[in-house]
Amino acid sequence: MEDDVREARIRCARHLTELHRLHLTLLGETRALKRFTTDGRPSVEIEIVAELMEQYLSASDAFLENMRGRMEARLGLLRRGEPLAHGKPDDAPGHGAFWLSFSRLCAVLRRVAR
Image 1 (cartoon, rainbow, N blue to C red):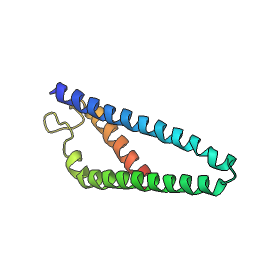
Image 2: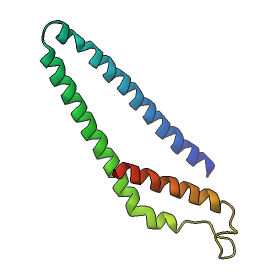
Image 3: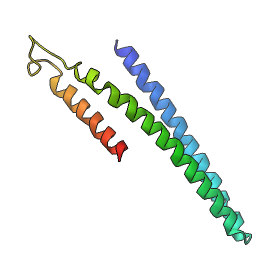
Image 4: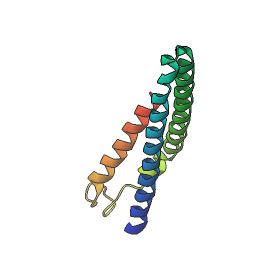
């Protein structure tokens, strides 16, 4: 059971690493755009960077909104997964950790909603 949790974390970490590499590639591309300004065409650099940032924000916003919607729809189900011991949540091992994680998720969802 722990293996599939570890595998899921590893897969997500790999995707985030790929995303970081893409960020670095995009930064390199935007640094190269300085040549347009030094060639006397600053409007080209301005247009390309504005387009890039608009498209990036649009894609990022769409991803975050999708994740927020999916997770908000699942909050009730997730909440019902609270650990119980003898019908009492306070006595269950992992009770505090569960609510800490749940609160963390709710805080991230509120942050994304802003």
